[in-house]
Image (cartoon, rainbow, N blue to C red; front, side):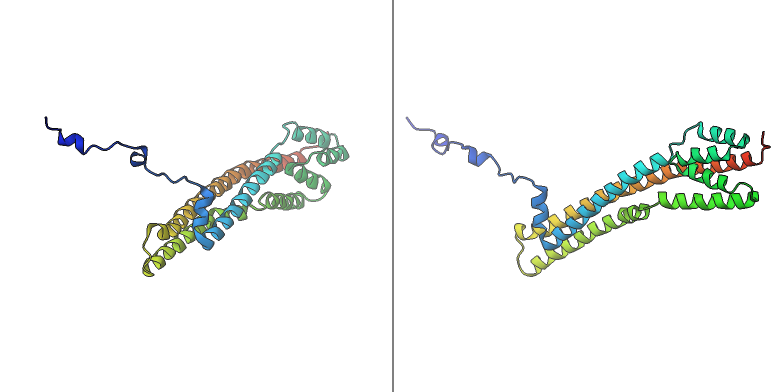
Length: 231
């Protein structure tokens, strides 16, 4: 009886022949493979991300507090002014830590002078308050534009590294991986930092616009109040 040739050539299957080798992914490892330039750019982007998040949180809380104006504040100031109790009105402003209160306080200290002079003094204080609220926002805007460019710089240097390896005759996958890693990771990191800074900047600007509107409304209301006869 003849044996089947098919069975003579059968080999037992093992797990090692069926299971592919998968390299574990590590973000730190990817950055390290980018070389000194990739590591430097990643550190710069990490620093910019920390600065952007700090500015975003700090400015958000500051602008939010500046916009928290009590609805009864101007009503109380109006009652004090109408009754001629300017001192109590000033004390009310001093105990209210908001830009609107500082605007009104400046105007109260100018009572007795021409209305145009009072308006100028109030506007100067308003400009100063807006300047203080805008503190560090320009830096946040700079980060939103600079971070993607720095990430793109990592892309360029990474590709240069890859082509240098190819020019030197080293075209192995591992030799090219460092440049490719650097190119991809720094670009993605730069875009993430830039997006966070960009969204944060525009959110703070919108929040500031609401505060400025409240300051302008309070200024108009205060100037109208000074033109009303004292009871």
